[in-house]
Each structure stands twice: as structure tokens, then as C-alpha cells.
Picture 1 (cartoon, helix red, strand yellow):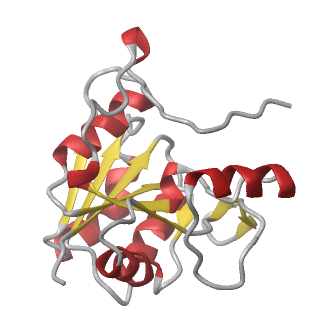
Picture 2: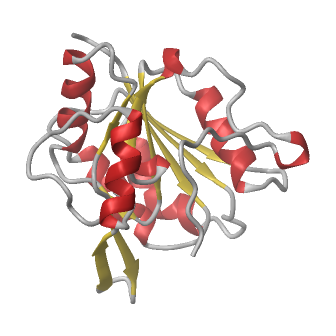
Amino acid sequence: MNNKISVLIYASSNKISLKTCLESVLNQKLKADEIIILDSIDRDNFNFNLIKPYLDSNSNIKYIKNQNKTNFIQDYKKLFELSTGDYIKFLPYYAILEENALEKLASFLDKNEDIKLAMSNINSFYEYSEKKIIAYTKYFKQVFNETTILESNESINKILLNFTSFLGYLSSSMFRKKDIDFKLFEYEEMNHITSADILLSV
């Protein structure tokens, strides 16, 4: 299938990490049709100057500098509304994609029309300097050794039995834009909505 992929990068800090994140998207085996970067913090053009060479050489990258004071929920909503892809992949500036990440997630959705969400682990890193990266981590414990489909109730049981979240964050998922049939991230003044089967607080 020829579904268009949009990777939406949210930059909320002036960090060299943004460059590493963007490079991981550009180095994918399955190329993203559209990469949108929303910069909410770049007051001195550090981020823009950092990625300008990539903007000049890749027509599929759009860079948007937020001129208004907004919260991250509004920024994520704006990214979603600006996207034109069939498949949506959110990504924070401090995350790295394995080179086959988009290919695996998109292929799974292609083959399973009844599945609404494809999830993966997420690699995160924090910079120490421009030449050294430290604290490279995988966020979630690996629960399955192979691709696994779970029903909602089964997912809840697995969370409780393993006492860990393996479903991941928004940034560890890919989904079809057409499947979003509600006002994304909207809830009174907070502009946020969520649907959860289970909520644990410790």
C-alpha cells in the first residue's frame, strides 16, 4: 500500500539533540513523506541554524517556529492539524528512531486494517555536549519477543501482571489520521482529552 507517512517532531528546548533526532528520521529505510518540526522555544535561532542544512537539502521538511506563547498540548494539536499524511508518527526532539522503525510500524498497519495503533519501544537520549551523548535509554521493558496483537482487556491484564507500561507514549506509536474521530487534545481550558482503560498512580 502507498500510505503517506508524516513524522511530527516537537522541539521544546534548544538542544543539539534535535539534529540527532532529525537525522534518525532521514536515515529511515522507509522514508517519511513529510517531516514537520514545530519549535516552541527557539528564541535565538539556535535550533533553526542547527537544522538549516537539512531544510535546504530536503523538500519534505517543514520548520515552524511558534510565535505565540502556547502549551505543549496546543503545540501537539497544531502539528496534528498541519499534517497531511495517512499515517502519523509523533516524535520528541530527544528520541531516536531505529532505521527500520517507520517500515515496521507502517507495514503492520498496512496488513491489519482493523488495528488502530501500532506501538514500539522508544530510544531516548540526553546530551552532555555537542560531541558526546549520555543517558541513552530504552523507556519500556520488553514484554514480548515477537509482534503481538492484544485486545484492550488483555492489555490491562498484562500491565497489572508485569507492573509496567509496555503500551508506551504517544511518541512510541503510529496511527492512521482517519481513525481520529474526536477533537484531539481538547478538554476545557487545558485543551486535552484522553481515553484510558486503566490508570495507575503510585
